[in-house]
Length: 461
Image (cartoon, rainbow, N blue to C red):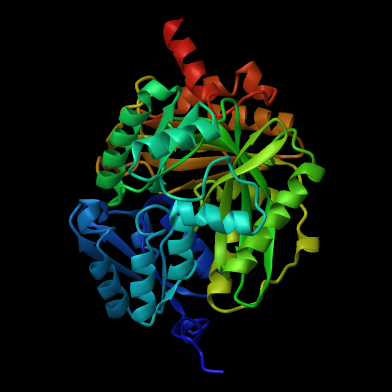
């Protein structure tokens, strides 16, 4: 049998270009070095002094500070890979990590894209086709049709009535909490459709929308999967990412509290089956809403997640290394029976932002103290003297803890946050410290709307 271009490239690289920046660039670099691979780091002009540049085998500036002209510049990244002799590209998360056209361009250039194939990204990146694929695989989905909304107003009204108000309108190509709008009643439906179509067109290049039932008090639950090119796939437990502000995750934990194995097991296996049916390769995350004991699929992220460390801490699997190895063509070195998740883990996203207004804070880090000790991990790229740029996402570090129980993990996180000091810029650390003192959060009695409500009460006090 003739090899496809993807198969012929697999396993034949010894150098990886990391098409990203910040803490995830550091994380990928560590994984590559432990696997004996060379790394090529790239940067924009704003990131010329990035510390991971000095630890890479090659460090190339690919463009101006603007992400559009550097980290999103596909031609510049592919040229850098060719100049540096890289055989593979790791996209990290964000930027081009779920861009099917970029994955396709990398494949056609003879590079291994460390992620799914471009066809898998395209299928799962469109929320409508993803929902259709999940329904075919038996994965439970949020009530609503698996087709795009038509233009006809009467048909749209009929669909909304069949689902039942409240409904939520979503961009088919959306993500990151953008391109969605809740519609509580019929008299605001058409205005919401028009606004969301325009938002989707501007943000994602397509006005295509779909409609689903709006669940009023769900939790956000994720299932992590990893698959190889040899028909093997496993799921590595579950996470709760319900602590969100403006649809952006703030704190994540694994496992999700209070969900018994008998409920989650069939959902995890359905996710594995879905991956096998679409020929998925690499790591991926199935995102669900969970309410009243039922799971509802909302989307699949075809990349490494920001919150992957909590799953690494509980499963003992180095997800980034596994991701690289399956891209090399290796067979997964574990089966489902080998996966055992132990203890409890939390991750706090430490952002360079005002803890009250949440406005970004750029500047020089004049002092940095990070916690150490058993069960504590910090993923970061900053140091004393580091200049936080205004050009990119405000994430500067991830603080992760692990302990035998959820209560012990919460106590460990409180201590870790108390021992974290960042001066010279504002951070959300005071906000995180206050959140970990909240009683409802400590009891696991929260849904995806809880944090917004908690913040409103704090502002009113």
